[in-house]
Length: 430
Image 1 (cartoon, helix red, strand yellow):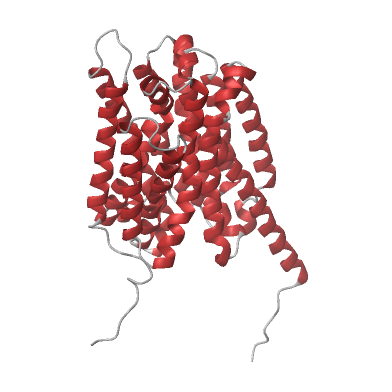
Image 2 (spheres, rainbow, N blue to C red):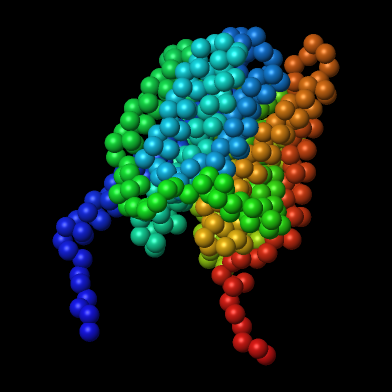
């Protein structure tokens, strides 16, 4: 009878060292996720400064800012395959460096450089969440993995809020807006170097024999994901629930409050930042409700209804009906329901391609923002009389379209397959 061998102390020490290294790398990647979300939302609080430096109107500025989402959507697919093929030691730092270079270019005050910079920011940012989840799966035990992923998402949403309420005062009182982008680039370079030093190399934890797998085969799982109609439903629902945040709040939120509702600039920045702050609460809270109930679809419907009602109240009710920060916070909490389709898409596809499922829904979600942002901007511009600034009626009409999108998401949710724990219980015949 063969003897069972116990792991040697050196092997245990090495495994523990690897685990701690992955946790440290996860923390740094989560900080990157925080930073890229802050940079994603930061242009919304400096539209006047950007307009003067680049000689662009608000509509053209929204198109420039929205370039971020084009490369984000494309590289959401590529980064998942790159992580599986090469590991995170170099893939994630390359993404951080891309965002750093993009930040510096964006701060130069030249239109062509700003366009390239925004595209680089989107491309590099695509690796942040996927890389953090990759690192978490190797650093945390399974019973803590969901908590780690939830904390990663909270880092990002908190960054989106900081990108508005903290960056606004910084660029309006403490430093020129260009210096903010230069300083961000320097900090990101230091973060990239730290990640490269800390993150274990792929051969240290997953040694392979033979030549690396062809890229074509690495992308093959996306064929399975995209052939599943439920995957498309998840992407459409999440994308429609994201639009009020990614298009309206992060780009047009401050102009709507300051120009449409005559809120002073500082208060407008603070109020707009409550929506991503609500995400910090809503994403994990609604996820907890979905797990606790054992049902996904009712929580999506409830969160979407809260999002639509609060957004409509912000748009159409006269100021003073609600405390100024409550509706934005509740709107963000309801918008947190957009993360539940991220769970469903992994549950309706085979276990071995869950990473590809995440990349696919990221691509679908941000493709919608990339494609619809210029359409939304042109819609506002077309309804504005020549020579006048975009006013309240234009914002209300545009916001109404986004609310209609949320209603469409609620209708599509009815056709989702329920994947909660209660739906998976197998009942005996009879």
